[in-house]
Length: 268
Figure 1 (cartoon, rainbow, N blue to C red):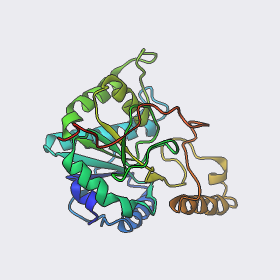
Figure 2: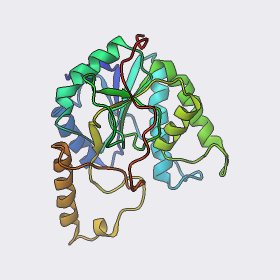
Figure 3: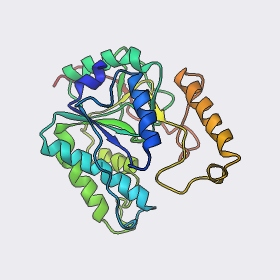
């Protein structure tokens, strides 16, 4: 098992049973970075399937948030020190294997609360030997991140509060999981949020499981072309030839409070 995966107490995968294709792709992906999906540390909990969207953009968005919440609650109930959450479309760069030992060693030695191996910050970060930067700004994606026991209870409470807030609430409500995590960090400025530098995981190019698919994914004649184009995109990213960013943003978000980690006083 790769040293970074060995560090976490549990690796939880979010996957819909009908998307066995995604699970198979992730299994192959993880095998390439040192994790057998059949390892006892790996958990694939049953995905919640809400009856309605409950005010969220879609049932899929709401169900995805509930999946993250269920995993966090399970980690707290089992008194785990840390849990790594993976969505089934996560892919890893070729730099991941080179970086994971140093990242694991620093996580063992210094205090941290959240670690995002996948994120949308594609430029401007320092590039320290540790492979990790402490970051105080906002970013998208929550397909590959870890949470420490120190913040599990407060994060769980915040997600529950988010679900229960009415539409139009001043702090935001009915949001995607990455937006919820952004709001949680904004409320807890002392939280030690780390991001890998560079980003070591992005989302595989594939039709969304959360919202309606594009017309070219529904067209049987064009679908193979779009699938091939996504595969080429993913491979170019793995080798560092291109950057990939969420469609939610058209330009780089302003850098905020990015600093090399660990720093003096960061020890647990």
